[in-house]
Length: 69
Image 1 (cartoon, rainbow, N blue to C red):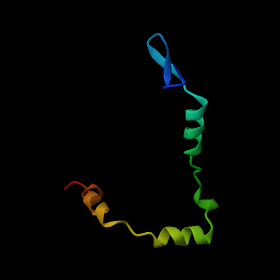
Image 2: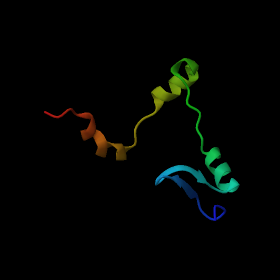
Image 3: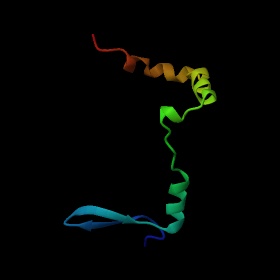
Image 4: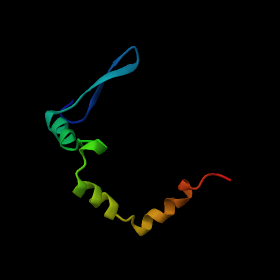
């Protein structure tokens, strides 16, 4: 069954682990991201971050930055 879809294993009604196919496991592992600490940024990395501009669509979320009055 785990070859077709993830299978949850439970103990006392609580999920304790999930069985999944090796193919799905590797697909998920490829999606892992490495998180860098600020001390690991190079000057070029920092400059690249400074140069990023938000898309016009992001303006729809500006209200979330304003504290409630």
